[in-house]
Length: 337
Image 1: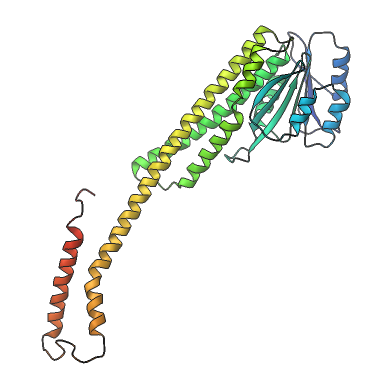
Image 2: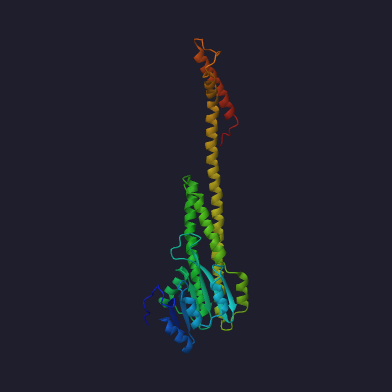
């Protein structure tokens, strides 16, 4: 069956899209009214996915009026951005998943939250802005992905999020490789502030996106009654894949830290070299400046004022003094520096 064209807007209730899933068949996109009818009368052992926009003022009111969701889910909606976690509450799975926005530009503010509430026959996802992972899931569903349960859809979402993070880490790795090559080639014009920005984004991603191990352990040890063993294993594999991506992010943070230290060393060496040159110029000019100041005083008794060779005598004395100053300045200079 052909699905209706995908729309990124929301209707009057804040509903972005709704899908009905039946066993061994592709999902069918439905309206909000049809989705509610399926929840009340459908006996095909399928489930319904509702995706809503929380920025719409009518979204939370519509959820409270038409769906029986646990209180913990509504409390999570008002908590703001928190670390990623999946909890079990009243035979429902409540997940808080932090994701990156569509136009992610490696800014810490480009991270937003997706709230998920899943039961045996219903899964609700709510977000405030366009997020990459959930839209990848929508695209997969529109292309005919067959999902047999709400837990499998949640696992698919976690896999999509891991893929998005893998792409971010891969792109950052390429940028760090370019910076390392430029540093080795001696043509580095990269600012440490840019590396610091990337490192801060990675730290925030790791802090917000890493699943809380305690909540996940409790869920896997005591899942809802409707969750099958296969679904629990799939969820475990999704979180392990996610953990592997987070380890790669930690390794990339260490690489950026080492690059920052190396850049700081290069900058310090350049500053020391410039300071040394300035010091040498000052020392060499000291005898000339001192003599010019003394000779320029309009007082009597200036030496060699009446001597025919007075100028050259002063020049010779300045040359000798400058040579001694140069020898004192360079005698402890490291020849390999």
